[in-house]
Length: 178
Image (cartoon, rainbow, N blue to C red; front, side):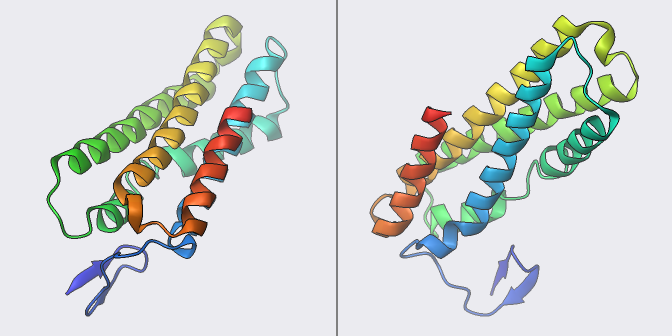
């Protein structure tokens, strides 16, 4: 029996993804949209420096940063492995999935540094440094989302339905336009 990482329960005869449909990507795509919205918030704060955003904006940003990035560093790893490896042992697949995992870990580390800077109260004493930290975070986070989407396209290949492929391609195109 395989474990279903989405529900945390044991599922007999859990399917292997012979075909990856649009519905299989919905949860991931929503997570990408949420992460990219967080990147937009970080960019808005950086663009507004040296002005300090209101406390509710900072609080909301830090809460989302902690919930979305630091707690979610490894949330989708099992799901991606199950979907993309499809029971095979492929060196390229493992390497790409390791890259995805390391990018999530790097984003988590950057998020923890930002949270510490804000919580210690010295974030706005050096606006150039804060701006650099914010820009490094949102640039890296956006690249991680793009890389993860490209990994899905590369590893799922012909197993993606036309709709699933279009969903990923549209998301990548939106990332280029942003």
